[in-house]
Every structure is written in structure tokens, then in C-alpha cells.
Amino acid sequence: MDRPPGDRRRRRAFGASLTSNPFRAPLRQANNEVICLRRFVSYDVNPRPVIAQSSPACFVPREASAARIRAAGLGGRAAMNLENKRAPVRSAAGFLVHVLTASGGAVALLALYAAIERDFPATFAWLGLAMFIDGIDGTLARAARVTETAATIDGVVLDLIIDFLTYVVAPVVAVWRSPDLMPTGVAFWIGLVVIIASALYFADTRMKTADHWFRGFPALWNVFVLYLFVFRLPWRVNAAAMLVAAALMFAPIVFVHPLRVAKMRLWTIGATIAWFFFAAVAIAEHLQADVWVKLGLIATALYFLGLPLLRHSPWAQDGGAA
Image (cartoon, rainbow, N blue to C red; front, side, top):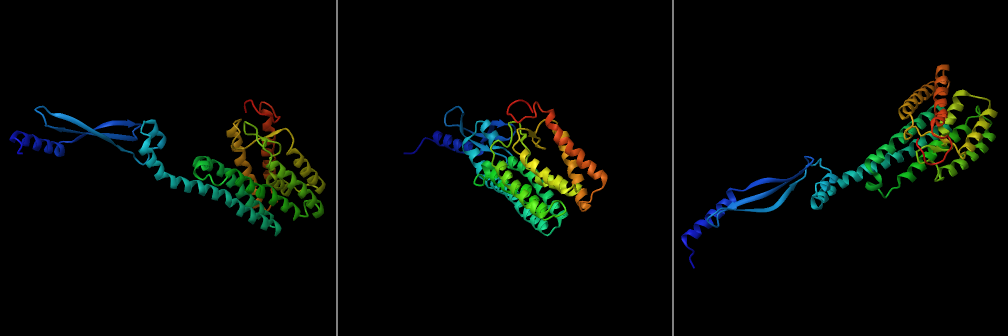
């Protein structure tokens, strides 16, 4: 059946308006990131114009975060697509942080080799590099959210393994290979005590208090042994000092974490940088440090040892302000 001429004109008008007169209006914009546009079309199927709207189309800039997409009420597919695009990048970033932490194991091996060869300045240079890696990998791990992006690797366990090599094993071997510090037999047996005590300390679930202080001497044997090499005290003093330090790992007193403790954090970071400077100079001088370098090492050590007295309590109980 042929349609009336007027109906054909209205159909032509409808087709023309549908293709040539669309316009879009913003539907939602959240934090200038997620923008949705809804298409409107006008047509003349009746004597008066009619406006119909279609489903919205959302545009997500690359810099938009999934959290803000959800905050905009656009969870669904837009957030899912963004997460899917970013997941490989975040996974790679998390895995690279783990690789950085694991590289400390290679540095520990280099330090051990230097200690066995009695190249003690090189030993402490490698141990200094290991401390630097250990100082930054935690911050990078939190930034990369490794517990989410690289969850198949336990970063805490990995960090403890590397720390045990660099903070405990390599320094103990350095003492054992240096007859100037104490007789080889004495160094061997004290080294066994230090290794066993440190293994127990590293496995202690109470290693840190709730406000991020270390509970007991934090097994910084790389730092402790560096002082032995720089100051060259009588071997009996060195031996007694190592035994006392091993016992202090289990004492109910606190030692400062140089980066995480809130109390006087800026001063502590400054003291840490100063300590690295004095230690680097001592290593560059082949552990035959000048008097001013020794005084600098003593001053920074006194700062770290005295800082617990400024806490609400030097005793290692949880709770309270830092």
C-alpha cells in the first residue's frame, strides 16, 4: 500500500534530522576526569518536534584513576577497562620493586667475597650500598602496592632474607677474617652466638612496636662491626661488646627506626645522612679515619642511642604516642 505523500515527507524529515541534527550534552563530570555525553536526536514524526535521548557514552582520560571513576558513580565497565589497561604496568612495577630488594642478595655476595679476601673497605662499601637499597625499597613497595600488584612474592620474607645476609652474615664473616679485631677462634665462637641470636631476633613477631620503634638492638651488625674496624679497640673489649649487643637484641628497650619513627623524624633523617657521610669518608680512608670523622661517628651514635629517652617511654611496650 502506498503511503500518503505527507507521511513520506515526515519520514524523510525524520531521516534527515536523525543524521544531520544530532547534538550531545554533558551528562556527568567528576573531578574533570570522567566525562559522559548523552546523544540527543530531534525528529518530526508528528506535527510537533520530538526529542529522544540515547544511552550515554563515557570518555575516560588516561590519567583518570579508577577510584575517582567509582566516586563518580560510573563503576562498571569504565572502571574495569581502566583497571585492565593499567594492571600489567602496575604488576611490572611491583615485580621490579621485588627485583630491587632481591638485588641486595647479590650485593651481600660481593660483600662476603670482599670479606673473605680481607678487602674490608670494599666489604663495607658493598654493605653501604645494601643499606641504601634497604632504605628505599620499602617506600617504593608501598608506592607500587606490591601486596596487590605482585602478591605472589612475599616482600616481607624477601626483605628479611636479604637483611639477614647483609646485616648479620657478611659482618660476622668480616670479624672472623680480621685477626686484628680478635683472635680467629674467639671470633668464630662469638660469630656463632651472633648468628643464632640474630636468627631468633629476625623471626620474632614483636620485632617492632606499634609506633615503629625496634624492640631491642635491631641486629645492625654491619654498623656495629664498622665501628670496631674504625676504632680498633683491644680484642677483649670488642668481644665483650659483641656479646652485650647480642644480649640487647632481647632486652625490653627500644631503638629508633631512622625513617619510620615520627618522633623528631626530620632530625633523625638528618643524622642518618650525616652518619652515611662520616661512614663513607672512613671507608674512603681505608678505615683509618681521621679524628674528626671518628668524632662524627660518635656524635651520630650518641644521637641514635639517646633518642629513646625522648619517647613516652624507653621501654618496649605498645601503645602511646611516639
